[in-house]
Amino acid sequence: MDRRDEERSGMPRPFFTFRLAKGMNEMTETTNTITKDTLFSAPRSKAENKADITDRTARAIIKAEAERRIAKSERLRQARLDMEARQPKPAPAKPRAAKASAKTARAARGAT
Image (tube, rainbow, N blue to C red; front, side, top):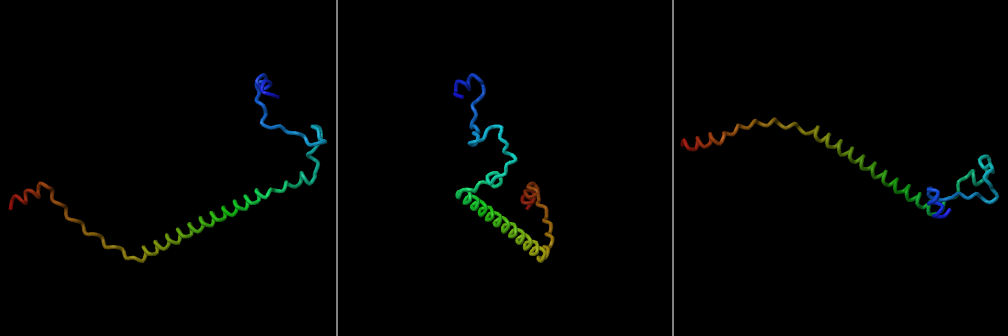
């Protein structure tokens, strides 16, 4: 199907097409056939294996760091609570005397 056929039919051209394996036609039954290819997955490439190893290692490192951070936060929180519990409670502060208003302060200065 070329561009002109696509324009005439109004349907876009497929991105990819499936090709049947040699010796197979559309009527061949493949779902009941068990072979080494259908039973086992294809071996992974070296790049995929290395990427998986790197991914697992990175995730393990990140998880370990998060666990250490959480444990440290819990430890510090507990230490702070213990320290606060040991300290005596401060005495209540004495109430401050109310400040005289500006008018009263001027009158007191002028009276003397």
